Length: 326
Ligand SMILES: Nc1ncnc2c1ncn2[C@@H]1O[C@H](COP(=O)(O)OP(=O)(O)O)[C@@H](O)[C@H]1O
Ligand SMILES: [Mg+2]
Image: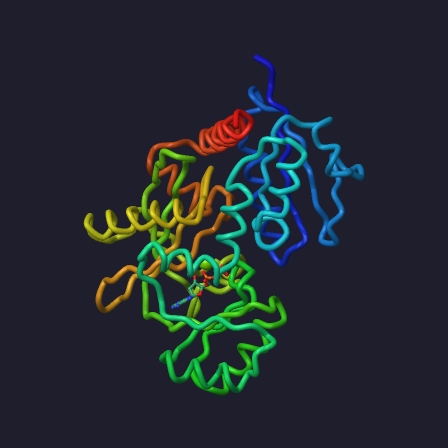
């Protein structure tokens, strides 16, 4: 059998550059070298592409690899831009396509899609940095209760997100979020447990276990995610069978509604008092280190780490061939 020349695309022009490097290293270390010839395709923080250390024009990818696996988090990678380039270049690739990536990357658009699917989510208001801040604060105080979460619409890893407890904090939080994106949102805070699920598939969907994150900080912020290490992952999440069923049902509906394919991690908030489940977000390219939630949820459901990668490659080829025959 000929080996598949697989290019792992990582790094990237995003605030999550370092996280992407950690994920890509895990994938590269675990991948089955009997089946794949691995090539590292690194994108610098400035957006320059290199292959095995040499400058690369991304249009030339097809001369070097058969299949691309973008392990990029955040803007310029998890948002459909790199996927669009790969699609135009005729290159099969792993994970969500242009649509799934762009819809899930933009928190405001994703929320509108979730709403159209009738999925429960935290009340929110959306605005842009062109809107007068005082009007936004007025509206937020009228429609939502404190604490509130202020977020840039396009980011990840909690970058630019603040939990605001009062009007003053809200103002600072908006200023911070606006450093990262012109599209912004304020969500009503829910005193919640954080529940995460893993979904794989193009048309037929398979779910992993359901997990819970117990944040070490007041919320699951950037430091807690990657540095403090005080957060805990509980797999399986200590929830009832009925709750787990509801989570997975909502996860699959959200995944389909957003046009996801390949794989994604679908995240929820579960109200501590009522047990009600709210969809929070979908991560088209979730953290992929061996201790990251997505691979661990699939492993808990019986897949081995290298098998997850195999399946992502199969699903990428399947989608590519389906598109080719249209
Ligand atoms: N409405 C909310 N209520 C309670 N906690 C929230 C809410 N929104 C976000 N959080 C907290 O902030 C974290 C990051 O927010 P999230 O929307 O998941 O952004 P990111 O894309 O950066 O992961 C969540 O994991 C959670 O801890
Ligand atoms: Mg999140």
